[in-house]
Image 1 (cartoon, rainbow, N blue to C red):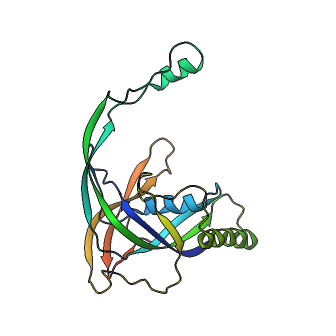
Image 2 (image 1 turned 45 degrees about the vertical axis):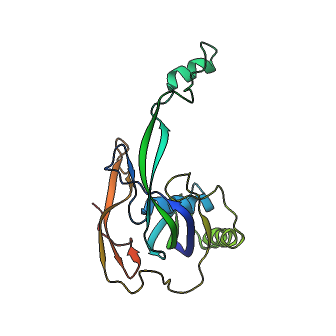
Image 3 (image 1 turned 45 degrees about the horizontal axis):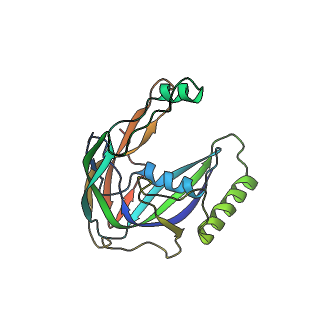
Length: 219
């Protein structure tokens, strides 16, 4: 059994990285369902529930910004960190001027989305009373702006605001536009096989600003 909500997520920037770009970060034109589910989990996180995105609306025009960012190109060895924690050596570190390289990032700017989503209870304790309790907590957090941690759009460097959407069917920049084929978009990892995680993609189409997720074929 699932419980539904309409949530508005807004932010000055967003980055939903395409996995085929190994070095440079290049964002999808629209959010990935897994990124939206992560933002919802930042509002209310519970080990016994799972957030599911059914559809979402893109309210603002899709605009991009390209920036060059100086990033760390290596990380400290976990084995050396454990040794240092046991007092068997110095704590490894990466100097500010060391192991740095410039990478280009193409991100989205001035984003505004309305997400139709649901949560499902996955720990085997589903009941009407429990669903009502969780729904009440989520609704209260959406109205008061409370969250477990700061929600973000794709990466933590791009935080977003959130609120309950009560305006009916959302309308935005693409409300009068016909279908736009966005190709394959990453939607999450398939963890049914404990030995290996497999990426899943769905064929995204934006029709009048709305991207349907539920029921779309996953490959």
